[in-house]
Length: 265
Image 1 (cartoon, rainbow, N blue to C red):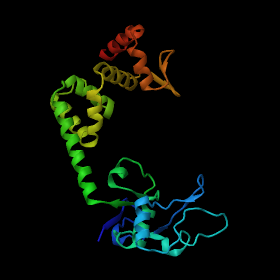
Image 2: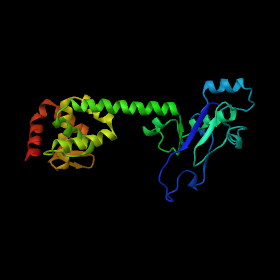
Image 3: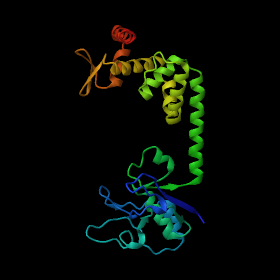
Image 4: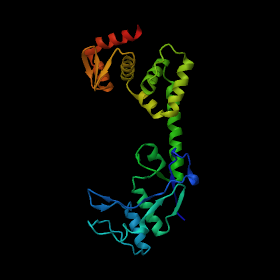
């Protein structure tokens, strides 16, 4: 048996019930028509089709859509899947169940994996295809990234950590103790170790200027008006990234020094 689990994504609902206690009606899905290609999105791969052909199935799995005409398989009840409020188990050695798993893979309501769900690739998903091996690999990867970020943090100074805290958490840690900084960094490390690594690997001067710009905005040294950021009447850019680039230019170093001095007052 080739086992595939499709699990509901646990989200708080108005009635507070989850799993088998959740009395919400299951959503039924099927292969929808792509309006651009005018073909059914079956989710079937070439390997799926080859295997199904070997099994001698007699379903019409052609994906061509004809306006005003029901497809003998994709529009039939047999191809529909009710997404239950509890874990559903499919045996992909059974042809119709393999087809249904493929349909789920092609649906916006079913995330292809826990990893892709966490990456935000399926914002409308209500269910997720669970693969134990893939889940273990994803978790191991997260642990590895967190360990790398922990080691990288141990090699930088408190000043740099404060800059990272400003950029990733919007927290000004000027004058705070090392213990306070460590607690904030541990919180960020738990939430987004990748972002910490990205900033540590980034040019030191860019990180410093980025933190200065955010600090200036918090203290109203710089002001945001609509989609632009100003220093008094001078437009420095459309967003923080624009201002960072502007202040890194050699001709604008005097302004950068001025802003830094204003933060020290």
